[in-house]
Image 1: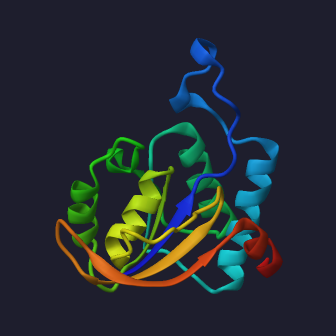
Image 2: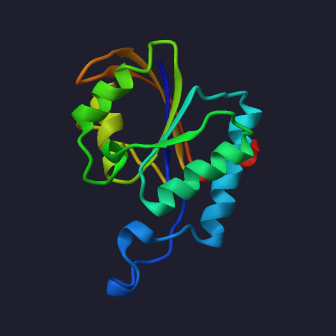
Length: 164
């Protein structure tokens, strides 16, 4: 499986009770960065068999914008396992059902995504920084409740914008 891990774009600040965390939207800069990531994905020739997202608004907006930008025929699916408090073992089990030959994009939050990356590539002590609108590519070799694989690359929004 080729697993692409995308952190949601910049979102508006949490303003206490007036804006719930799960309702925060992408900022204009966040939309611009995500658009750039989507355009870079097109330039890199990547097509997704599955696009999976946290149901929180900022991640959902990110996934939908990437799907539109890449003209994906794949419908975005929303998985609770990708929420900030999601169960990573359950996520890995569900991902394993998608097939070894799949190309999958997951969109979510920090620090959940960095923890997932470290768990897959065996870098528990490694410092991995996945910036907002940053994209990682992992080639997954072993499946199950725990996955293992190889980090192919990790791109910042600045690099993605240069590609696009």
